[in-house]
Length: 275
Image (cartoon, rainbow, N blue to C red; front, side, top):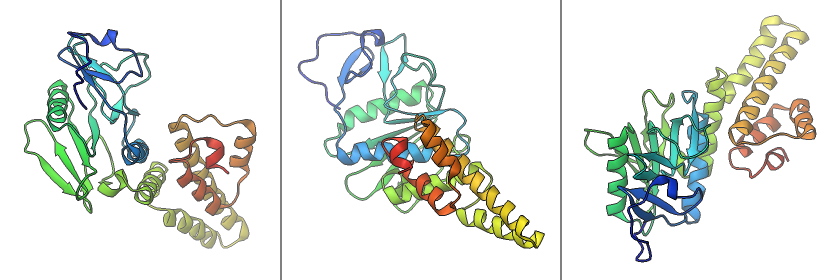
């Protein structure tokens, strides 16, 4: 983020900033926000998918959501916000419980510190700053607490916001993000892992001791996978056409459903996820 020489003289209010413009406000001063680079933008998608799928998240997760406070003098848009009601039009008016910022090459460190301080003062409980330059690490900022560093092989926790720990690598690495998202979606259905789904299917068949029992277990596993996939597609904002709905509901292969589920995290459309 930079303060360009071309900025007109303020002060400004949030209602003077149009949605989609590359500006934030700090005490009425316009701050120009550059668009994200390739790995920065990709990380937004991966990280938001992991966080949105967490079983503890009951409200929305958003990317680049503008948040207004201080009588419109402050307008900030963290890279990812977690646990907010984002259904109303216009700028959000509440502090996000958890915010994530990705810091890459060219980051204005002074501006980043100012943004963090303002969000914490407004009421944000936790801010994760993911450092994309140098060794992978995440800075954890919390009000009244010393800065903590969690390194690339560690896990992040957000008590009262997220149910599951977040592997640091899941915020930037596609495979790690898919693994964490799948774990979260299965947890929403009461399963600890994909193996647990398969095990239940086998155990039900063995317990019943007949083909009907095995089929019932398989049908439960398939229904769970379909429900998890539908939940992920809904979270991405995708609407299924009748043909795609028929394809999803008609699929009776658990491996195929799991493949579609991992694709749904980053696919540009529902059709691409279910291809």
